[in-house]
Length: 47
Image (cartoon, rainbow, N blue to C red; front, side, top):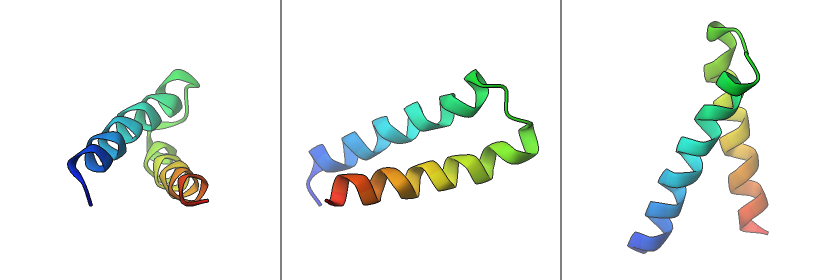
């Protein structure tokens, strides 16, 4: 993968990690929510 792609992936990961905090997910549910959202984002970008 190119460096640009890796930097975009890192940026998306940071953004996705902020979403559960913004919407006040319980701390024990945040990790699962982030994993799900990252998987969805990768599928969306692959299309």
